[in-house]
Length: 263
Image (cartoon, rainbow, N blue to C red; front, top):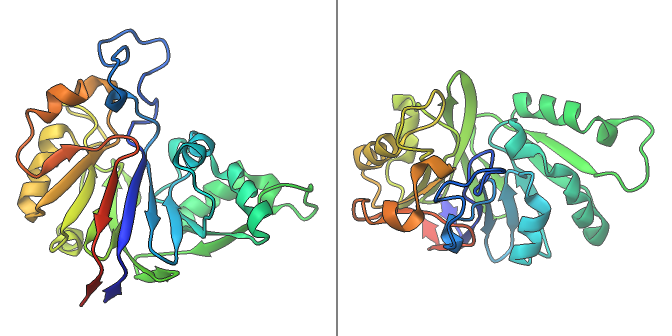
């Protein structure tokens, strides 16, 4: 499979409440370190020809402004939870400037939630200026967004099926606490992967820090970036010093370059 060179930007690396959390005075939420300021989790994926985001968080507008995104070809969704879809309305700015609908790639479960949450965008009589969305249903079969190959990976968020995605040799997984063996095989051979690591204590629907480390080591992926981090995990600098070689905590604004491959 051919994949062009990619740039991955972490638009947000926080959990559903973000960091700092409203009303919290813990050492992480009051930290002056910019790497302890985390918007809700999302990435920007760019090739020389194609640009898309994975998930539109409640912070989507600010993430686009902060990163200076002027062109967006598509949105790719992992699952329908509010912290991953709530910012979708703001794609209407791209509708206006690009003069075309926004391609939305999502499974049927996520599509159902999008149609419910943004019903006005799908009504028979549309109000001027609402988002113009072109829904494209995906399943576990690989597909293309522009010139970028996308291979879905089914993971489990407690009992909810969630999609991770592999782009060439880069894998992105958020909101998971279990991956079946056959889906793990889709990750093997990645040069880099992103994985959620919510906190150190056990959680019903997210990997803990130790669980995330173990999975990366099991799969033999040489470079890993942890995301969907809560204030309970601890300060970026302190936790980073405790991580094995090749594993880092991602931070908002971090960029990762992925070489082109031909396989």
